[in-house]
Image (cartoon, helix red, strand yellow):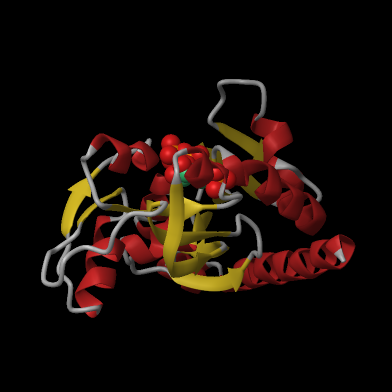
Length: 219
Ligand code: PRP
């Protein structure tokens, strides 16, 4: 919390525009407009009592859990990959995608008892998924370009997120299983929730209204 402003961590990248539309509807200010086209990573919106900070999507939950921001926007994939002590009051219904298992189109099933080699940045979700099927996987931790791993012989399968399916198709992969349906969640620091209960309740209510309004507009 900076002075009287509540700090909101918004993710860079894919979720920024959709998050901004929600905040604009809820509190009349757009973090993308405030932060966009500059290298500034923080911007105040005193009219709304908020300060926005621009954070990598994978780091938003850390900022909020440790209290560097009171509030944040984070994908369910990130929240389930690395569970944290956070309050998750609202499904923002944006950033919809899925964590999936994909394999090369036409690949033969692995012989019984052979552990698949699985390339992923979601090492915990992937390990838990295969363990639950009684099939301990050899997890290969990558940070990006996961879809190219099977064609290079690095992995039998991948666990990654897909939105449009274009990256999978372009790399000759097909979805074998869906692991987790994902959307972005509003996350709130637990201590902040007690200290600023009324202001945070009003913000959550305003965002809940904005989610409904934007869903209505989408039809
Ligand atoms: C994600 C994911 C896929 C791609 C899928 O990567 O890792 O590569 O999006 O999207 P699609 O189904 O619409 O093709 P992202 O763009 O977030 O970048 P990253 O791999 O660097 O995290």
